[in-house]
Length: 98
Image 1 (tube, helix red, strand yellow):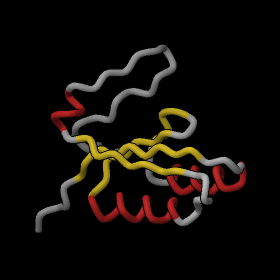
Image 2: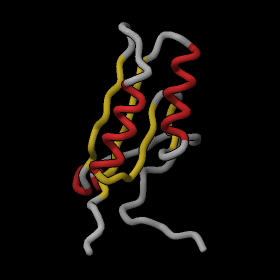
Image 3: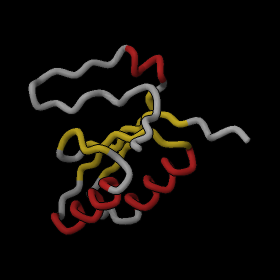
Image 4: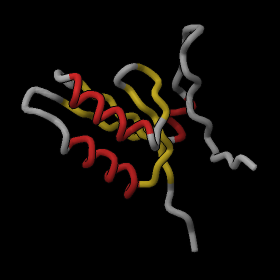
């Protein structure tokens, strides 16, 4: 059975209340890598990407926003990172730690 295709997802949010912001970041911290204060990246299949988005969106207030971007392998190959403390771009393949 083929495994679901995983794509890099970038989640970014703007949340006004500290308590809500903490709950939203907690949702992403379990499944993604924080690359900036309100930006997370993860390699996920469509189902899991949508679950995370929906869970975080359920926490938002009327003045808050959440975005999810899907980055293809072609887009990832053209992406760049700069700065000594910048997190690296996600790898193209999955890794298994043994």
